[in-house]
Length: 212
Picture (tube, rainbow, N blue to C red):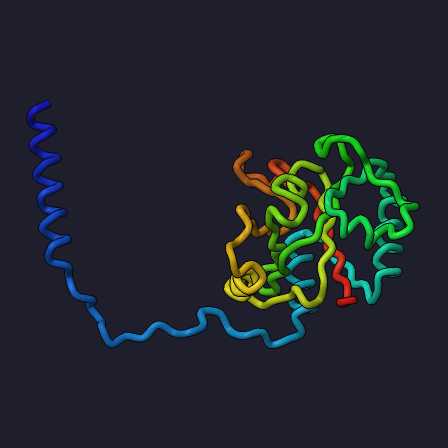
């Protein structure tokens, strides 16, 4: 034990001496480029749709609220989903302003799908930016199907643009949880075979609505 303690103290002493005399940068005049990735060369909607669908997401464009409601209802009927979970009052009112469309009162884990909004869409990575303010912490994870409703004004090119958007939207402090969801949940840990829907939704839909 004494030898182990002595070795540890020797190592710590070397670390303290190194920190007291920091090594200068090997290339002090080298400049870091402002952009790591090239700027967008095409429409952000097209770029996002291509990347999102490449990652097994399902994308739909809606020119207005009526088309949005029609497409989502058609999807629900076609797939035979009964329990539709939605915890956001604004989104509920958008999808069913007359109250004709009833939402599930069952717990989230018993729902067929969950519908949420988002904070932003990242075109370069095909990601949905979600937070504790958009459906809560669990709405996009516990249900087997996640349907996200986004506005065209929420489209940004890169992750840094999404973070800047969040900072402008919440100047007094970011939401307590922010996550980037990129396609359905997946893992390749099981015998190196890609399996979808293991730790989250097995299907993810994004309905992009032109700003009202």
